[in-house]
Length: 112
Length: 197
Length: 236
Image (tube, rainbow over all chains, first blue to last red; front, side, top):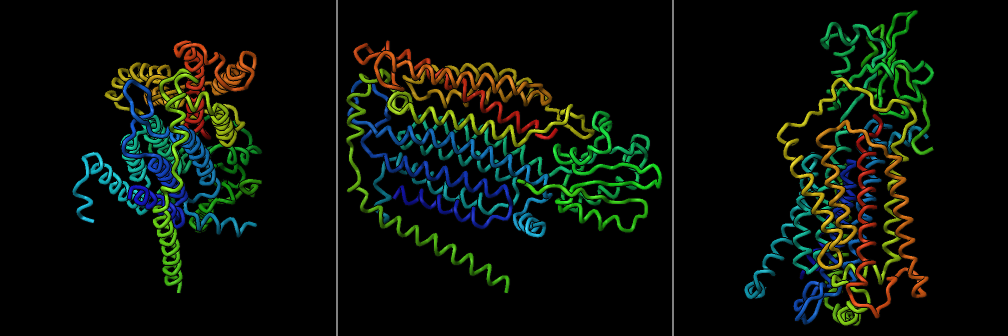
């Protein structure tokens, strides 16, 4: 039941990405998708009897530590991609003067 | 299904509650329109997901998620949202078109104020001496590279005011429409390269 | 006409997403056939004696999969360069005085930030150095240190930073990381692993982990500081 509820968050992020008319809202939706996917991976690796993957005395079994290491990398890369895309958004606003996708695309078609 | 929900431990209750909260917050983020509200929702969204990470036995990922998505990313979002509301004007004419005395009266100021209120932008006027001392030919480079949207100069022979801006900007068309009735204001648009060429 | 096309588009979109959701739900029932725990068993038994760290996630990030971490640090460097290049301009005298720049933070915030700043810095260094014994590590501690440095911008928005110097130091630290990771070619014969043998005890092997964590932490902190500075000074 847990992975199903998490996948719903990912699908809501996709819906927001497809129907957003503001440029910055698309970047928000990508952040939601990324957080949902990371939560999905951690949910699939978790089981009920395990414990945190830090070794100490009298430990019976641990949760798999490999997905967690990959997800740390994913978080850092996702944040840098967000920063880069926001810089591009600022440049688009200063060039075209509007924050809506439709007007910017219409302006671009008229010019070329 | 209801008896499934009755014999769970406390941690599993908390996990289900937090996941439903997450779904509601995602719907709220997608359907809001005010960008400032969404930034605060993003910060609290990341806090809720960090709690879920700890419940799923992953404390390393939780520390990374909180430090990045709840402390640094909202700062960058706030900066980029506030840049999208500005309209920067460089005033080279230096006479009472905009300012007389120390007050903001003058035809130019009223016109620009009406124009920026129509688009819900914030007007920001500067007359920095360092930027004004650059010559006439570098106006286009000034518009392209810094954030200046409009340059006001005064033509010394005919006595009319020239407003210069970028041709690719949508705001210039509206400005041209608004200044058609005024005889001594003229709008000149730079034809610049397209974004990405 | 326009309204009904929009409604049809949204309906098709929701139907498509619903199909994906139903397919995912049906595939969740067969998850148990994929699951195996070979990796988990191996990490549980051999993790401490191979790498010398109790935190198994740090052991994976810095010993078993050091190649991934090197490229992640490289991506940070590329993103920093991209952000600086997009926001660059050649006009001299970049910090023009604006008439209506009204940034003046309240005095309460300034006093509180002065109190909090050394605590955050200390906590960040603690998380970096103790990466192999408790949850933490280079990446996590590096972002905490970057957040602590950003408080200084909050106090004084007209702070002058020399971006060129920071990026140069960041590149030198990245080269140092690659050098430290390649020392193991000399002592053990393989690239990108611990330069002590597994025959030493765990405390000796942890020296390598602490060195690498500190270098990665500094690199991440400097990179995020540069990105934030480029945003703040863009076009002004």
